[in-house]
Length: 538
Image (cartoon, rainbow, N blue to C red; front, side, top):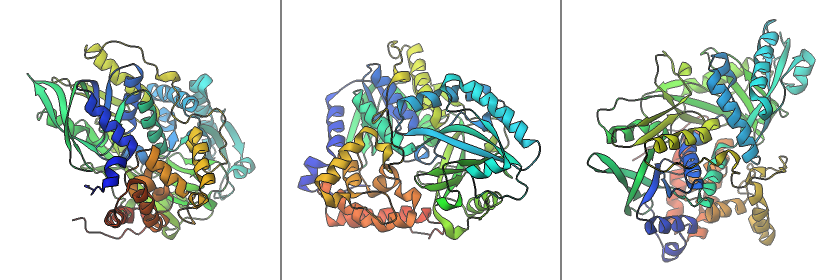
């Protein structure tokens, strides 16, 4: 994705990104080079930089472009994993959930969940399991689980299907904004003196006597090429992990089985109130969630095998029908295809096992140290990113690739962390940055205008994304700096020209860039519409 730079752009092409590239050029030898800017890679960047290692991270697309922005928006221990008997994963995830709630309270909040009971045994069965879940969380728990009567269950979820409803079990887990957390993690890494650069693609590995010494990288925005020399190279490329592993050693067999998960977004009136619902078992053996999020309702997810990785996975018709059919069994008013505001898919990097279907594969993470010294980390889940980062660096330390220094991230606040958060504010997730955005809106009243009548975002938020959050494209702005594309795909498409104009004004881009960005965004966004229109991708 090359862009034409004007004279103004050469001096103002994202001052933060330009600063990162300048710092990259100034350092000839890095302690750690991380390839991949999703949850795992950004977590490693924070951990490594906070320990004092010279750290650089490169991402070929935008931060959290892939799996890390397409989750069910839950920071959770994993009730389903407890049911599967994976106690180790649940204990680890519950601890990390608690730490993340403390370190990023502006992004992670308590979310109550209701498991509706339609059979006599479900109340005591799930009630006991969730009491164990509470006990495992210990002091980091978010609230106790409670068995509810039929009337109490309907108070929490009045639009539940009432026929045969016996009651429910209420429990607590965490909810968050995944892409916003990733952006704040990138900012945290920079505050810890890491260099992080989006749209910088890793290419050929540089080796001497069979050992990796660095990588060649290419700037996807202007074609510039660079060489990074590093004592340790970490492959944190998520669903693309096996591609880099095989470029290191062609004899390597794949360690991942890829799975696609799709979510639907509908208006909140299908499940008013603040309580989410969890359906413990659907026809394919997965759980199904309906979760309030940014004044909409996210419903998902599916689990279908995928043969190869993609940066922009496309939802399948059968996935959409599956979700609508299953949630329709539990809600008084069944959502129809015409009610869907957006549909989005993500790919999961699941570590291979003997299971016949991807729903049963491990969500544990996997770390490999190759003969050349490449460290690959994959698998896992958003909730455990901090522990995954710590484990990856432990491998490097034990291999004598970096000196042993203690991990500092358990108590390290994420950028924007605010002790007292007003969750009733639509833009609460900005944390300490919200005051600065509001100052822009107060100083320039036109910047307080919404980018679209059906979206909660202002022009100031787009300008802020360009100035402070390394937002380089319209898609960056509407998919990850704001979540417009996930909340209402049609509204995002209609807002794209205005957003492109704001970014062009910030960066000094031409009208040709604006038109190209609108075209590219519309092609991508068409797959988020409930009736995707096929487009030619020449």
